[in-house]
Image 1: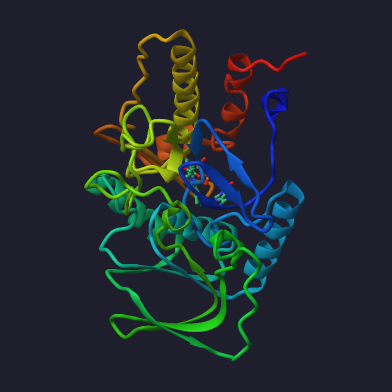
Image 2 (image 1 turned 90 degrees about the horizontal axis):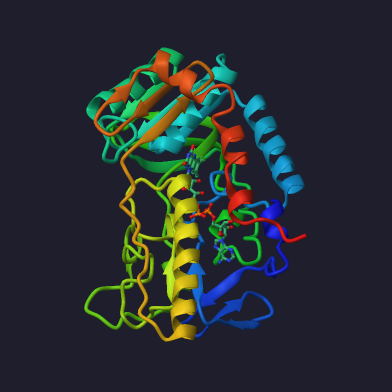
Length: 336
Ligand SMILES: Cc1cc2nc3c(=O)[nH]c(=O)nc-3n(C[C@H](O)[C@H](O)[C@H](O)COP(=O)(O)OP(=O)(O)OC[C@H]3O[C@@H](n4cnc5c(N)ncnc54)[C@H](O)[C@@H]3O)c2cc1C
């Protein structure tokens, strides 16, 4: 990304083991980086392959190839958790490998829980069934029986801090659901909810409210932590409790807003003036669900765009090209 080549940036590829009011600590070396201002943007924790364990593009391509080979050689695949991730994965698998048995187990009666219209969630369930996904809704997995007793692989270093370093795919197991149903699966993908980064954030609350809610670290609309003790600490993106539906657009605009507010605080500090911070609006409820190559659904403000129309709004590249051409470079020109 050219804008990251700006000489003002120092980029350290490190794992943070602890965040305190004065410094962040690096895993391994335990080096401490002190700060005047801090932006927390660590997202949420998900084990691989839903969370990304690779730290370079080459590693990521290798991971994708490994997972693709495992999928290609499996006959039966179970997905546990029918949020947006599990639902899209089930539809993608059935689209690319229609001959496989794909089962989606989900605890609610309809997939994609959240602030979405019933029409949207029912539409997703209908498309999954049309594609041939076996849907076991209203059921939970209560037991997992391994077919062979391979010893568990040793946990990689720092996987206690970064759960994405752990591969959560189970091979050759039988899962049992609350209704007593047993599903034998060559592969099981765990698409259950994400966890907050609370375990590595040591920022004690100075109020009656906790620093973290189950939905993330508490922030004000300025994206500063919602605690008068930490006016210099911001949190953006999935990490904060700003939105129930955590999406990339809000993360990008949150980063930009936190940067602008820090600039205002620094300028006001230097000039001794009052400071007016920009406030973010709560993100709108919207979701594009892309279900294989031929189906999609879009939940708008108070309407649902049906599949035939929605797929044209997502094709052919899920809007990746648009994101790559966004105006970052105009906003932050690279120094010559
Ligand atoms: C499978 C999947 C599909 C998705 N599809 C869409 C979609 O189609 N559209 C959409 O808008 N959103 C989608 N999302 C959500 C979107 O990815 C997130 O909202 C967005 O990435 C949030 O950005 P972020 O910067 O807050 O966090 P992230 O993108 O998660 O970035 C956080 C970064 O911090 C790093 N990090 C975490 N802990 C540490 C630590 N201790 N030390 C150092 N680094 C650390 C992580 O490795 C990661 O690189 C999807 C998410 C998933 C899982």
